[in-house]
Image (cartoon, rainbow, N blue to C red; front, side, top):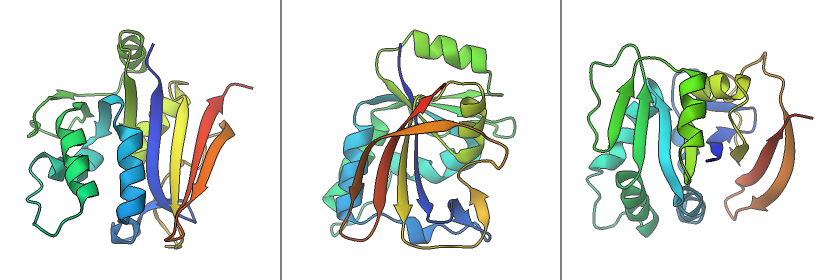
Amino acid sequence: MAALSYTVICSLDGYLADAKGNFDWAAPDEQVHAFVNDLQRDVGTYLFGSRMYATMAFWENPHLRADDSAAMRDFAAVWQHTDKIVYSASLDRVTTARTRLERSFDSRAVRALLAGLDSEVSIGGPTLAAAALRAGLVTDCHVFQVPVTVGGGLRVWPLDLHTRLVLRAERSFDDGVRYAHYCVTTE
């Protein structure tokens, strides 16, 4: 059975994007980006909501410049070689390869998907991740906290979610970003 992990880059006060929808403050430097790439390298399938998919679809044809980093080029390759499932009632179609569209998130169908896969599955976007957390599907959370507060916006964790997490690993990066790997426990 495949593990389902939630990987997120957020502010210290727990937001993925600020109140205006901006997340430029979360752009990883080369060191953090390379670390994220290594985490994502073993992922066989990404699960996205429509907003996270719209953000991530850039990596399909990223129009990289000659001076763009090796980590950016590496992530583009990781993205392009990974299967993707997008959950959206509003999208008419998906525009990236290796991608299928599902109209709604069905926890039973995701549980069956996980049971049939050997490689890790990663869920992106806080709304979709919240549904998976509530359904008891998420096994791991990889949280990158950027040393900034934004005061409001799109929350990483819903206010009504009660989940026990056990710290498995942590790391600090030169730019002040702190990484923590948590396992979700049922205790």
